[in-house]
Length: 335
Image 1 (cartoon, one colour):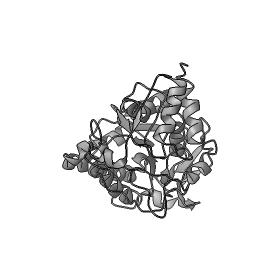
Image 2 (cartoon, one colour):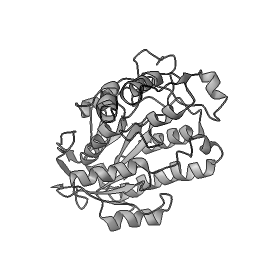
Image 3 (tube, one colour):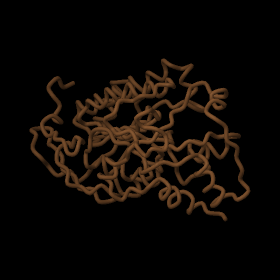
Image 4 (cartoon, helix red, strand yellow):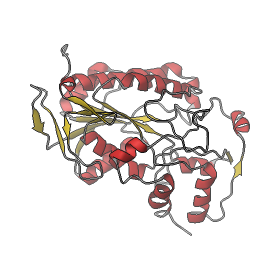
């Protein structure tokens, strides 16, 4: 294990509030990333023509989608085998794979939902805090860039960011929601991870994909609920957004990004589109947050995240409504 400072410190600069590691002249849109990075042997720049990705989260939804994207784009990758809290095994994964980039889509979200974390706190800490920080440190010591698929469910509407105001939380604001133990651990670990100069933190919210059969899909979830609240929220359309995550990784961006589409949509607005495009006979009922609180253990986060920073890095980023129609409802249109 190295005890000297990792080579990230030799080539780090800041652009528009975002750490950039080594030298990047890439374009942040699918398929057009050009990357140069720092040579760990002496701080000299070299062209990196063959990036290699190591993906954690093999059995998860996002992990599987990332692997599919790697294959479509002809990028070398393999899945990590280590449990993230096992430092020896993580080190072995990184070294034996020859990875230049790690994508972390692993972690505990709870089954069937985050209420599981309320009664499994030690397991949640082990995965979401110990494991995540261990991976970040191992990547740092090996001069490897790490992208973490984190959560934006660490904020809630408040007096400075009222619902419907269009004023979203920006990346530098401290989390203000710890209503669930899941969110509490995620907020804690994000604060610590942000100090690693080799880590890019992507705050995902209420992820959506074109696969309406997937039970993790936010649209699928609310379409199956007996009742839903009706609150505008920021969300992440994975079909559009995951390619951007690979580009950000190739460009070795670091720091925090609100990884959501532009703008917000309410539950009712989404279900109205579901009814219009997928099932004209579909109906649903609303209930209040107070009524919802009676059937869940932990409160849920509701917020708007400001996507301006991500939009600047990824100019093609669509509004939430545009993205949902283009990537989800039009491909699933049955009406």
